[in-house]
Image (tube, rainbow, N blue to C red; front, top):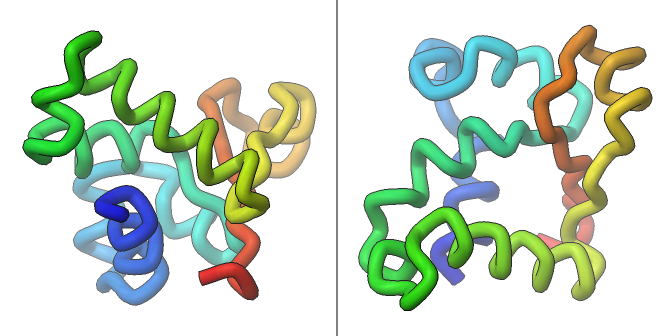
Length: 99
């Protein structure tokens, strides 16, 4: 899927590219995580999400939920994100073995 490809690319990208989309991106990546901000900015303009009848944000959230159900991602609790990264932003831990 587009979302899985976006997540896989995140882990191979140059650090400067990541911080353009998410200031915390490099720190998150080191910990095997990805921020919702990065996913939203990279995927919102993709046709697959843009053409979702409920809009791109809803389409992205549905795709993220599916990846969570399939065991590819785990959404961190707000306290966990705050403790690990000092952020209230939505953060996902990526199960790299699934990719």
